[in-house]
Image (cartoon, rainbow, N blue to C red; front, side, top):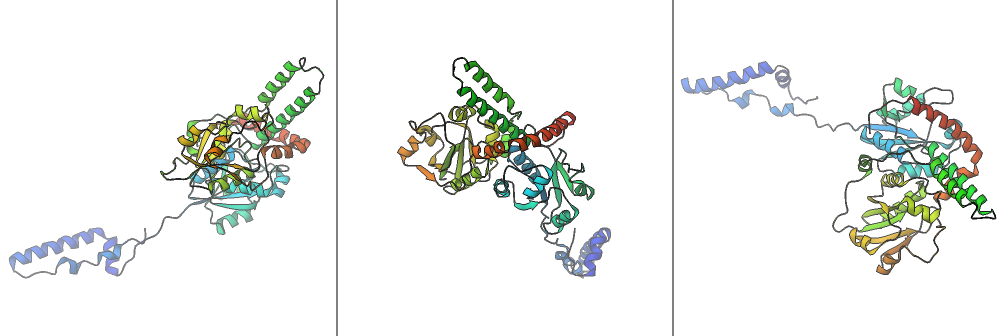
Length: 427
């Protein structure tokens, strides 16, 4: 603790408290005794004591801890979001490094999303303060020094799952050696490898459906179609175990103010991508509070086919909740916006983007936005990007062999991780 001093007396008194106490007591006794016995007043206490202002503490603000976490963030999911949330809790300011396309190709294979899309997803997370584009896959000595000097990073963060380079060495070995490394807990039940597997499984399901529809006898193959549909669901079923605590961790925990302009937008938000981030940003700018409705799994399957959604309701809801532009989520929102919904949530405007998935099983005979249109509160907003879930999935399907090969290797390492993993405390 640092102090300012105006004289050597103050310093001596501060460092010798017993002497200081003795001086005070002696001065007090002298003052009392002389006033009673002789009428001669002794020097008063304020003249003997030094100015107490010399002991005032220097005003120095608490140093803000800056932490760094990096990743590819390809096919951004709630596991990525939870890792970033945990990293933010270890400091005051979170800086996120997004690995370059070239580094991903060299170390893991081709990314599904380009750098621009991955930057949009990371920047859209509510816990992120700064983003470093084109970060290296491994923490090299040069890059680590840049983090410490230029970006004033105090700690480098990574999950408890191993991150190995092609030569088998630890990508974070230097940070650990420097004593500036902290570990967070991996979010179980999801990974980019797992999502790629779901997409490939879904593609097989679509292919099988097309083959079945070309057969001459529909009745003879009906049971076969149902069996394939069931197997498709089993192939890419999620192993995520949702908890109420996780939802609370992702939530803002605040409702709209009494005079807030509440904006409502709904959708599947399957395979959360940059297009979702940008349309949510645009919607949020139209009011004070953004309420997002996330459709049920059953609704999406009815609208788009049994191979959808790729992510289940709770996974999709967490991805939406993690977005910085979202204030609240209706988990399992109805497809049709009703008058009761508008009243219950005090919705001021209902919006819909110009780019959305085509619904295969519903024609134009039923409009889910009929009520808000009749109320005069419906508005179509221009979608900033033309990305949809299907177009992202098609990138993987179009490069089927590459991703099958990549996934085979990654799935083997993930199985090993789960076979050898131990309990790790954390959130």
